[in-house]
Image (cartoon, rainbow, N blue to C red):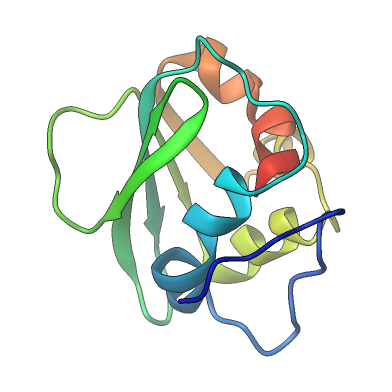
Amino acid sequence: MAYIRMNERPEIPDYITHTEYFNHLLKDRVNNSPISKIPNLSAIIQFEITDRGKGIWYVVVENGFVTEVTKEMLEKPTCVFILDSDTFLSILRREITPQKAFFKGKVTIKGNMLLALKMNILVEYM
């Protein structure tokens, strides 16, 4: 995928799937976002999508930048988000916050709850 330059956060197209987002957009959107990175943020975040095109993706974050998006587990994730594809895309499109999705039972969280609670901040990059 080509290098993306962003002056502002572009909208997530309606036609995109979660698979396309993980495989083609996430890394560039986070790393090229004009929003200042969280320099001390290093984690492996696991996203488990439970419905159509289901799968597990691992997002490796080092010093606030995504260094890798993979379907292979490298080591135990820092936190795990289990949700369906519609909820995942709704969060990215800012139609629902991660907290609201969690409290409505649309997201299950495992692992480091402090990092999980910061997902509102992390979604700004995505």
